[in-house]
Length: 280
Image (cartoon, rainbow, N blue to C red; front, side):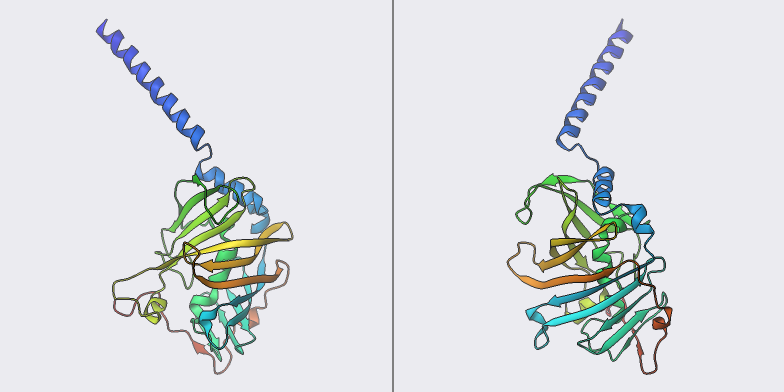
């Protein structure tokens, strides 16, 4: 009899736990993987993105903090498979490239080093699909209202198990804001942990993260079957200070990658900067 009572009590407990779990799932019905998959689908799907051999775009940034030259314009071309890249900075008269081993700058007059700039905006623009990289760690999806967005958003933390790309570190993080209705990536928070940049900004020794900064997508465009942002604003978290306004245009997923532009021209300088702070 006692054994029967134990079995009955155990069954009741398991039923109670099951009902509580079901209730929790009603409040947060979509698991992280499902939300992320819906985001990827909303941006054109993973299969379509994997077919892209070369990804290129033009980027204009305006920021008061840049002083006498408040505009940065760069034209970026990335080999999607190798993530090698070359860039042209027409206002600065500068060029750079990264061949998978080293980055160089020619007539480099940009405040940020070539390694840091190499895949900086490539990573931002391709975040929906880059969530599937092997070194990405995603947190739990939580649904909430945020003043920056019209609809409720799913919020997912994104971090790395190892260094994801040149100019980035294992300590870099993102917080994705995904529209709960159309599942577009409406914005994100991000941190920077590239050691040279922290030294450049003269952050205290021992500080290994800059940020988070907050970026909102205010427009999108269709490129083939894929959806990319076109107008972006970077600010502090409460949006009281604007760090930069960005226009992304001249997207292409069909132009060939010119490998000859990876060759270091005479006079170009190899970027010696490191993701590790100088005091380490």
